[in-house]
Length: 313
Image (cartoon, rainbow, N blue to C red; front, side, top):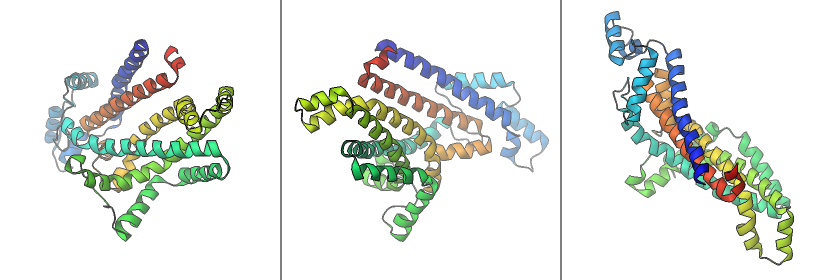
């Protein structure tokens, strides 16, 4: 198990080093005159040159990257070129908002998807047909449109939840829960349908195994069969899909954060990328990569727990 974990950690460290490096190259290769954007079109050439020198843009690209990487290893992600806000501080205020949406959405999706998938696989019939219809509808509904409709229905026409904004959980669980209800709902629809289909397929495959028929013949209770044996065997597929959903939700949270004006990582990434704010972009990319690596390691450990053969592979 330790060897299994060590391999996952090593591959994760490679990704943490590689992804920000790639982002740096792409940003610097495709960026315009950032100093001119910061100072405005009325600035003189001397002012632009001085600003570029202050930002270190006149140095070789490799030197710029090595300086950033060395500072990042010490926990210093630099300062935003446009707002002068420390990137670490910007991440500290925005990461909790995004993680709140993604973690709660993943939990909600897991609970609902397991219930739907398990019921559809075990009972079949109309329940299975309903799940198929819901899956098609869930895939077909554009998330951006659904978020707007939720605002219209439950924040404007019926002011039950706030239309915009985010309340930190430290300011009160009630306010926090109300502020994320609509965003989580918008994100959860697609995640639920995708995960439920995978759970359904995995459970149906397990139910057709000979050892399940043997347990039934021995008179094992339905609850023990499903929750103690079948779900554990089918858990690998469901856990893998949930991990992929979690990672996908990090990107999908961008449109939700913009619709609901939530100050999260997705919103700041879009803004900083359009501006060419390299330190802020690299900070978001680095933090996101670390989160993805941690989630992948946790998922791999979970898969290894459910399926010991995965640890050997």
